[in-house]
Structure formats: C-alpha cells, structure tokens
Image (tube, rainbow, N blue to C red):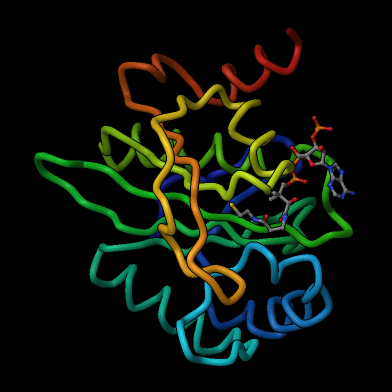
Length: 195
Ligand SMILES: CC(C)(COP(=O)(O)OP(=O)(O)OC[C@H]1O[C@@H](n2cnc3c(N)ncnc32)[C@H](O)[C@@H]1OP(=O)(O)O)[C@@H](O)C(=O)NCCC(=O)NCCS
C-alpha cells in the first residue's frame, strides 16, 4: 500500500512502515518496555519477545493482502511510534480497527490524536471505508483521552475481548462512521480541543 498523497499535518506525519524502520522501532520497543507492556497484545501461553523484524514482515504481508496497514508516526521527520490499521473489511461492512502507541519521550504533545485524525481521514476519504473502531482498556486513561479529543462514540464494552499483558482484558469499543465524521477529522480535533 502506497498512499498517493502525503499523510501529514504540521509536524506530524504517517508513512507505511518498512524495513528501514527496523532499528528505530526495535530500539523504542525495547527502551519503553515498562511504558508499553500493560497495553500490548500478547499470545496466550507464549512469552513476549520484542521483535520489530517479525512485526514489520507481518504488517507488510497484511498490507499486500489488503487486510491491514502498518504506519510509523513521525514527529518532525523522526519515528516516534506506530499506528496500525487491522481487520480491514470492504463491501457491506467497510470497517477497520486502529491501534497505536507512542514513545514515552514523545507523550503528551497531541501527536497520537493528530495521527489518528489523519488515519481516519485517509481510511474514509481515500480508501472509502465507512466505519473505524478503536478498542481501549477501561484502565488506559491516556488512550481514553485520545478518543475523547476526537469525539468518537462509545459503543459498549467487549468483555475479556483481547489478550493483553498476559490476560483476557475487557475493552471499551469506540467508533465513528462516515456520516458522523462529516468533514475533516483534523477540524473536528481542533474544535474539541478549543472547547
Ligand atoms: C495512549 C497514548 C498513545 C497517547 O498518546 P499521546 O500522543 O501522548 O496523546 P496525547 O498527547 O493526546 O495525551 C493523552 C493524555 O495522556 C496523558 N499524558 C500527557 N503527557 C503524558 C506523559 N508524559 N506521560 C503519560 N501520560 C501523559 C494526559 O492525560 C493526556 O491528556 P491531556 O492532553 O488531556 O492532558 C500514549 O500514552 C501511549 O502510547 N501509551 C502506551 C501505549 C498505549 O496505551 N497504546 C494504546 C492502547 S489502546
């Protein structure tokens, strides 16, 4: 997947993850273990090993099949995190799920809300998807702020939905449809932030 337009706003940009991101992602994922681990998906019965190479291969293979898209989040041209689009379905469902993380050193600068706004605009305006979902553990206050800033709608709770940090965890499901978006997510973000 190669977006035909730059996906950027000010100093924040998204670009498809690639092999060239291996060392940077491996470094950040290792350095920020304590920061990321409570929110990271795990496989039941398997010990987590940080392996950016395997992760990049998996995301590239999903992109080739059109089932998912992995992006790096850039701030002033430097990779500071990731935004992954999973469960991409076209046709009568036309929906996808977004997940994200950012380096602890880059937190609190509104980078993730901007990246998510860019991604939702891209998925709906360029790829023609109708609905975007974000699933968040009720304990993850920082991530709940991200969807609050973007004005996503709470759909409900999926109990013991995803295996995170070694156990099956409840998730709050947030979503937005194209009808609700009604314009640029960046404008929506700017409006909710100034309220
Ligand atoms: C959730 C996360 C992606 C938010 O990214 P971000 O770019 O920092 O987002 P924001 O700048 O909008 O900050 C969101 C909230 O985080 C909190 N925050 C701000 N600075 C922070 C810091 N240095 N450390 C921890 N939390 C901080 C604030 O409550 C902030 O809300 P506010 O802007 O109303 O004050 C980031 O905290 C993260 O990567 N966490 C670990 C992985 C994770 O939780 N991924 C999401 C799984 S659903």
